[in-house]
Length: 103
Image 1 (tube, rainbow, N blue to C red):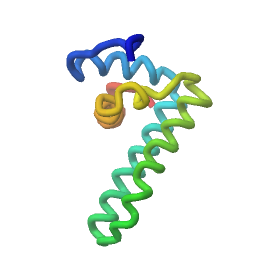
Image 2 (cartoon, rainbow, N blue to C red; image 1 turned 60 degrees about the vertical axis):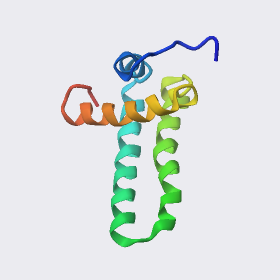
Image 3 (tube, rainbow, N blue to C red; image 1 turned 180 degrees about the vertical axis):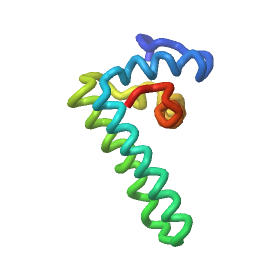
């Protein structure tokens, strides 16, 4: 972990996170994965089918990692910054919905 950039706050991390998602196909795949995560969580809570929670990481990370490995050609930030990366994904999702980050 010595070669990693150090971030003291999410506000410092988020520009780095966006830089790691410069490819539109990668961002779109993140958006699809995050939408599936939200839908799965909502359905699970509404239906009480708690076993569906096991699918949440696959839905979110599956789409995101395809975006990184095949389009962005970089290592997902979640490997080095798991919490900030999760927060970054939802912040980027919000910013895409608001038009602050392009699809």
